[in-house]
Image 1 (cartoon, rainbow, N blue to C red):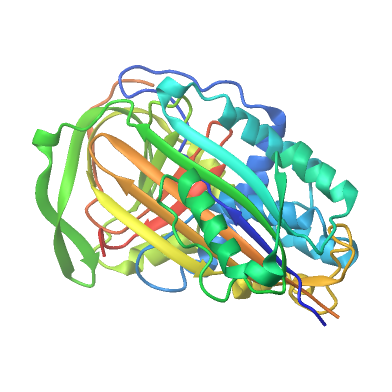
Image 2: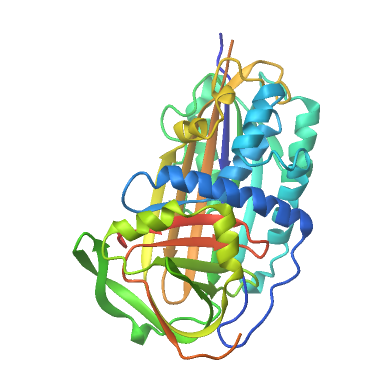
Length: 408
């Protein structure tokens, strides 16, 4: 039986909620559909984070990218396969409306003024000339994901096709995601590759003074430390704390985009970080976000660059998505032939310094044919392992990571 491969690459970036560091401001009113999508993305983000966090060290991924890629895959699922995917992806409460909700998020990104920064989203399908998409599926991905279709010859030119797609992804992500499809990912049996590429670049709303950056210790845990360039800025930030952690939001020049850092209390080892991670869920995250207020703060955080690559098939199956990876998978809403997901490959990149943040991510779903009050300043010194998120104004977690050791 000839294999059908469906590769779905999604790149995405962005950052956490709310105002300026100088005076209180309010975020723009959230679009109800965008908020609906953000809710699903965030719940899924925590599920994936917990699975990835089982391994020690740095981690970084884009929940939005994975959710977007899987949403386009889910659009072609039917029956029990669709039900399992909806539950695992946290789409179950939203039904078919999830596609309109995801479009609402993307539309908001497309409306970002160019002078504020760059947050570009691009989608394309590469369809083997031997195959046909179900017309309703093609209409759906065009309408809600803006995905155009290009016919290609995977049978006789699969390696050339792989390079062409990689070049497209690299172009759309400013060369931050290169060679996402590696040798063996595209074969003569490949039938469809659906690509979503996103790139983010924005300055901080208020940059850090380079003259204040110093080489300082970062406590990596278990009594160990390394010297890293530590940035510093004092100002007003949205700040929260409880007995488990401190958290702070750092605004970008793109309105409504923020980075939020969660710093576990007295974390000289990974013990406190692990305890904090065990309490992390979507409900707790939403509650903590409500418990922020304007505070004067002395912020210390490291410059860093990180890039991670994951194969997510095992994780998604642990979250309950079994049928989609089995010979019993039902993707009859996508193509005429039976198929299953073979693997899900994810890659994410981030680099930040005193002036700006640049990030990108890619997700490949490989399928085969089957039989405000002023108070005394607080100190926020991110010189030990911390969790960080990048979100948009709807609150969607677009990127999430754990910084255990900068530049490791």
